Every structure is written in C-alpha cells, then in structure tokens.
Image (tube, rainbow, N blue to C red; front, side, top):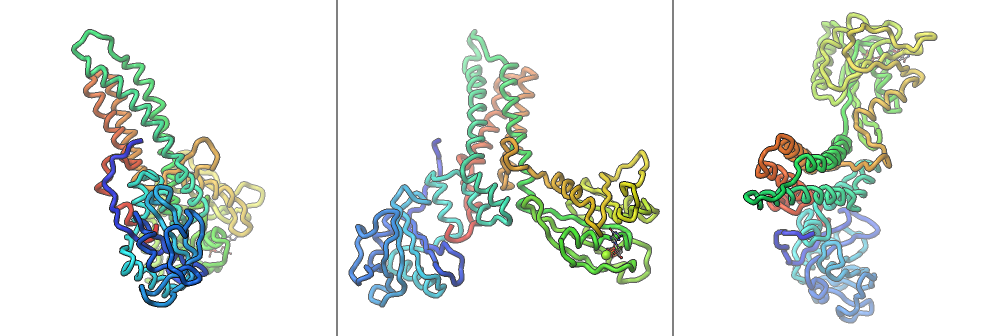
Length: 471
Ligand SMILES: Nc1nc2c(ncn2[C@@H]2O[C@H](COP(=O)(O)OP(=O)(O)OP(=O)(O)O)[C@@H](O)[C@H]2O)c(=O)[nH]1
Ligand SMILES: [Mg+2]
C-alpha cells in the first residue's frame, strides 16, 4: 500500500508512558532520529563511566544511571531499552527509560531531557501519530490503540485488540480491491467510448457489486454494538407507584440500592446504577411512580422521570402481573414514545399457575411483553436476552463479526455503502459510464479516508489529540 501522508516532524519528543502517580516503575518514552545519541551526556554506566551508543544493544534492557543536569548527581537508576528505526512503535529511533516510579523524579528526568538532550515534550497522541505517518499502522489500528487503552470493559478491549491485529483493515482492503476492479472496467469503457469495441456488461458489474454491498452491510451491523460499547445504554423504568420498579432496579444491579416499601410513592428522586451486559455499561434509572398526586415532592419526582424518559435508549413500563393493565398503566403507555420499549409485568410470583402474562388486546402496539418476579428472579434471563438484542450484541466467534468502535469509521462505512448502492442503481438503469464512475470513485475515496490513506490531513490532529500523552 502506498501512503501519501503529510511529512513527519522529526524533532525528538519525550513523554511519560506510564500513568501519572507513584508506581513500582515509571517509563519515559523518547522518539526521534538520533535520540539515543542526544541523551548520552545525561547517561552514566552503573560504575560511573560515560555511556556510548554501543552500550545499548537493540531491544535489550541495559542498566544505566541518569544524571541531574550535565554536572549533577545521579537522579535515578534506569533500565534503558533502545529500538533502532524502523523497528519501533513510531518507526523512528525509540528509547524507553524505565525508572523507579517516582512522579517527582520522572518529572525531573523529563525536564533534563528537554534541557540537555534537545528533546521536546510530546503532545497527546504524538507517538501514535508518528507511527501512523511512518506507515507502522493505518488509522483504524491507531484508533484501536486508543480504544484499547480507554476500554471500559474486557469485551471492549477484546474488540479493540482484534482491530489492532488488522482484521478490519484487511476486510476493507478486500472490499476496495473489488471496487477497484469494477471501476477499472468502467473507466476502460470511458476511455474507448468512441471506438467500436465491446463494452463492459452492466448486469455483470451489478452482480459483482452485490457482495461488496453485503460486506459493507455486515460491517455496519457491527457498528450498533460498537456504539454501545463506546457510549453505553440508558434504560429507564417507569410505572405506577408500588408495581415494583425499585425492586426490579435492585435486582438488575444485584444490590439493595433503592428503598423498597409496601407504601405507594416510596421513590421520589431519580436513582441510577450501572450493570454490564456483554461488556456494555447499562445505566438503569429508577423513577417515581406516576399517579394523580397533589404532593409537590411527588410531582417534582414525576417531572424528573418524564425528563429522563425523553432521552432514554430503552424504556420498560413496569406493571403488576396479578392485576393486568389498569387505567393508570394505559395512561403511562399513551405517554411513552420510544422505539425500544417493553412492558414488564412484575410480581409474577403472585399469579399462581399462569405465566404471569395477562391477556392483551389484539391491537397491542407497545412492544414486547415480559413477566418477571423481582422477588425470586423469575424471568430475568429473558430480560437480559431482550437487552442483548437492543444492544445489538454480536456474539464473539459468530461469523466474521467485526465491531466498528469509532464513530468516524461508522460514518465512512455508511457513506461508502450509499455510494456503492448509487453506482449499482445507475448500472441497473443503464446510465452512461461517466455517471456510474462517479459514486464508484467516491466509495473508494471514502474507504481510503477510513484507513487514513486519503483526505485525513485536516482531521489528523483532532483524531490524535484525543489520545493520552506518551501514546
Ligand atoms: N410478591 C412480590 N412482591 C414484590 C415484587 N416486587 C416488588 N414487590 C413488593 O411490592 C412493594 C413495592 O415495591 P417497590 O419496589 O417499592 O415498588 P415501586 O414501583 O418502586 O414503588 P414506588 O417507589 O412507590 O413507585 C414492596 O412491598 C415490594 O416488596 C415481586 O416481584 N413479587
Ligand atoms: Mg420505587
């Protein structure tokens, strides 16, 4: 692959690679041509002699001391490892200084590196940006590094590691290769438009675009789940007083967080907690019961509940299994507007023998219906299945699932799919080759942008500035 990337800054940079704070070890990362040589005046052999480049065998940890200024005493005892270009994270010469994890000393070492070794402090993400610009990884892999570091769950980390391995990049490579073939045929027809030669078969080209569209769709299917891994999911519980919202809430969280009493109107404030489904952080919100009340405290509780319903990713209207739907429930249902809603009949344990699921009218339009018991946990497995569906969970190992972890990638995939669809439509309608070629070129441009080959210059700084320093 040939990369036409912006020129790489070649000044030497240094940054703390381990988190700020005390630790057993603190690592400072340095990158730039000749950076080892620049640091030599600050380094001493353990016995006290000056260090030479030859002391540092590549990729081996070597003991050395670092001085406080060119004439000062020893600041710390280090293990130093050198990665000559291009076999390093950034593709440049990289040196890592492993010191004792004292924040004060690490800070001082960084100052010395700037003052005496001709380095400057790295900006957030600058090491990764150099790795990208030097062709060590594409933009998708660079973004995977960021996602891996910031992963909020093991599942999110696993997905990021998979992208780091280049799986998604390879799939995109396959898609692009097929698009290039189709575009080449279309372009050939353009070049010879005036001559009496056989032109490409539009139907055949259409058929070749079908698997490309399917592949893009299958990648997009993984973006819903990726978004959830990134952003989480907010589930709001609403219902009449006393139906068991807080009990359901407590059982979902696995702890006794909300107050539960037999009195109607127990909960007034919003109460929230988090649990994890397939690596996605689900925030569940318990709310005040909805009923006619003149109590200003309860009215405020209901007002807040309504506010929260409006922004929810999913809504569960809780009702009582033994009563079925009563007038108050219907009023709530009439208020609820959500593409992801379900009605949960709680207290199914109070309905002897039956499923706990009351009969519903034929024109039911309020989503799926569940019967559970917050008392004994019956039916909660079904609730979890529902959540997994709402989250778009891709089961690992199932097919060639690839989770799109970054919003930028999802948008690019959507644009690429739309462009390929447009070119297929134009082919079907027997439109001139010139017209067919335009969206085909667009789709390739967008995919090139996705891996970072084209058109990313303007946004590079924005992407990498969200990384942490030292990465
Ligand atoms: N048998 C049975 N009782 C339940 C169940 N869930 C809740 N309860 C009881 O129902 C009563 C009300 O429960 P809560 O969880 O406080 O109900 P709520 O909907 O939060 O009520 P408000 O906060 O007043 O709106 C309590 O006495 C609970 O013990 C259930 O699944 N089975
Ligand atoms: Mg409650």
